[in-house]
Image (cartoon, rainbow, N blue to C red):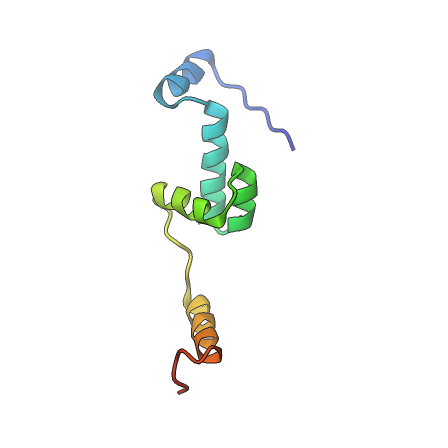
Length: 91
């Protein structure tokens, strides 16, 4: 999908002056917001921004101040995995 955004020349110039490629900044902002709201997965963000690994996505999100999404279900799954691997005593 191609999206075109029209900005007044003065706004475009101000954004370019303060941070370079406005198109890239827009794409990154969209990825950050989508990931923050859990509308986009790490894999989708990786592909969207052209990163090679999910580690790059994590570093990008950390730099953007986005917390790592980790909830109780993730913790329970990690405990189960550790039990299966024999690295955690059974309850």
